[in-house]
Length: 275
Ligand SMILES: Nc1nc2c(ncn2[C@@H]2O[C@H](COP(=O)(O)OP(=O)(O)OP(=O)(O)O)[C@@H](O)[C@H]2O)c(=O)[nH]1
Image 1 (tube, rainbow, N blue to C red):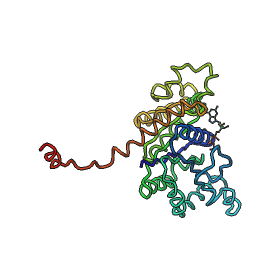
Image 2: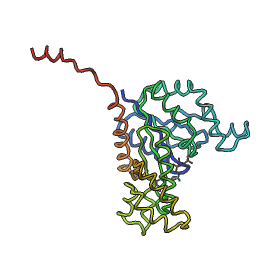
Image 3: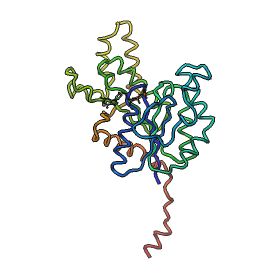
Image 4: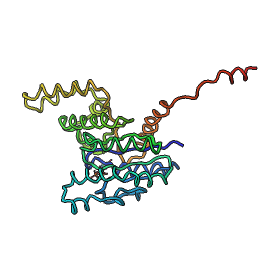
């Protein structure tokens, strides 16, 4: 059976939980099996009850109260604690041998940029439980209204791609909110899906002090050299939009199958068949 672990990542308020809820609603509606795994120790409410919940192991509130940490330090502590108690997670997940696990992740950016806890966790799920992990990274579409913010967002998505090294889908979330933006034509919008950073740098330069133009150029050159950051639009309230993302997740995780060694070709059997 194919077991997919989809990690829904992105900064705070990018729309992760809403998307997880919409994806589960859509999948269950078409009869596909899936479960929500909450890995946000500070989460409050969910549309669907999580099947596995880090808050049963540790909560951010307790860590902040008992250890005196702030929210970011506390979050890292919670994840280190989770890694020390990975048996707990593996046991919880072990009971759910279903097709898809949708992981709702916290919004702290350090988890996707430089703290190596998430790659270890993903590796364990892949090796110990035979899951096919993939990352879904949400960037709020309002970022494209301010080009400088957009490049910061692209860099954050790129960091996640480099650090996680698994099949990865970037989403521009809440695109419905752009509809009222009269300055953005359809053609304009498309430039942010299949991005050509070298073409966009002029617009960033127009908004920044000339002292930074060389730095802007180096940043867009870096993104252009990497050449792997594209976005799909997402409107979580729109079933078609969610359906499209699911088809990309299915395609992306197919990659694992392509990596599996094929059964050796037995020419003796073929000869027998011919006889
Ligand atoms: N218009 C619109 N609003 C959305 C969409 N997706 C999410 N939102 C809203 O954006 C806000 C944040 O959404 P969440 O799903 O809680 O975001 P999150 O990334 O899980 O937030 P954290 O858990 O704080 O990191 C909520 O008010 C949602 O209703 C969307 O597709 N369109």
